[in-house]
Length: 85
Image (cartoon, rainbow, N blue to C red; front, side, top):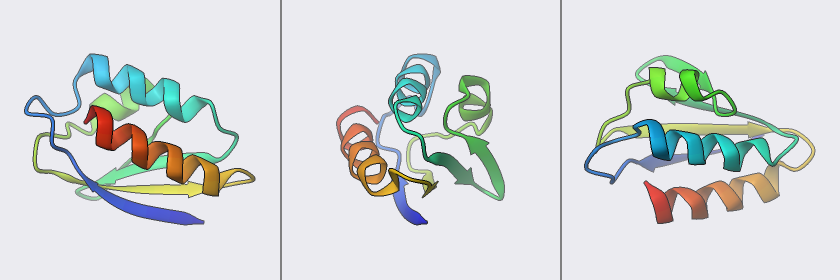
């Protein structure tokens, strides 16, 4: 299992467009990927779950990744988040 923390920098937080992009990025991996915020957890491959977290600018997300390609997924998601959120 891999995990890391990412602080949302987008002034609008994770709204529909970036949530969709995040789901698309996460769906490219076999590993299970989840986001945690304030005690709530969401499957990163489901757009309504991701948007349901209500992540705003300044919130810290804990990203958990486990599965066959977890190392590759972790690096790709870190890069995605830095560029887009």
